[in-house]
Image (tube, rainbow, N blue to C red; front, top):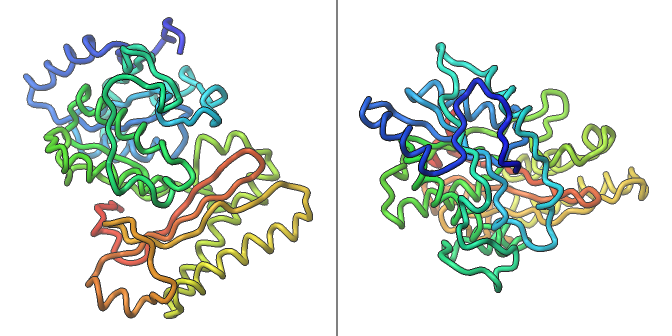
Length: 334
């Protein structure tokens, strides 16, 4: 990010010291602070989090920081969309009950990682956060260092922002659940675990594709005609689960949707699935192949299941999920 910040109607804070001076005033004025952590390239999904925060807090703060620690050396750090002027323009147009965003924290890499940061974990120096036992499943199977980077940067952001409440999108549900566990394990007070809220995934109104900054990598054809296959696959698995079929059959039906799309494309687009799985939201453990909805509900009394998947279109990796069962138990707000 350039050290020269674009014009903005919203106060921008590029340093920890400058933000903390602003935060002290909010404390003195007894104002609640809602927080939305982003990497920029804002879309309607981010803005839905902002609206929720505006509705529930006196002040709303965003961070915009592309975090190198959550990208592996072969991933898309260099090409990740950076659109700060547009982000600020979008943000300035969002209001709820006459409230607008009160501040944006826009640090550079040195501000967040004073010792410097390598994308190679073996070369990193300094303090990092790992949530042991919860970072290797689901997304962690494909991106084994991802949650280490996320947990580290979000801990730093919570320490800087000191939010009363914070909001994450359901599209990244493993991330949100892991961060809630982290706040509990580290005894954080800003936010307290019960004040980390998950907001339902924002979707394209026509195709139901989950909104994502990485959708910008796709062509119009891929975005409208190929990418929605992931959500369609999850929907087929959901329907199978709700009719009482075992997990293995549910996942097989989801795979079949992707395979039919691959056949339809005839090699025109490089489409392949990474995983489709069903997990316990508390432990992230994979459900057994034999597990079915009636047995699950009898054993865990109201705990939902996370049905999630990831799919590649060329070099672009997309993720999505559906929560099967009582969403409210995961603090997913409607």
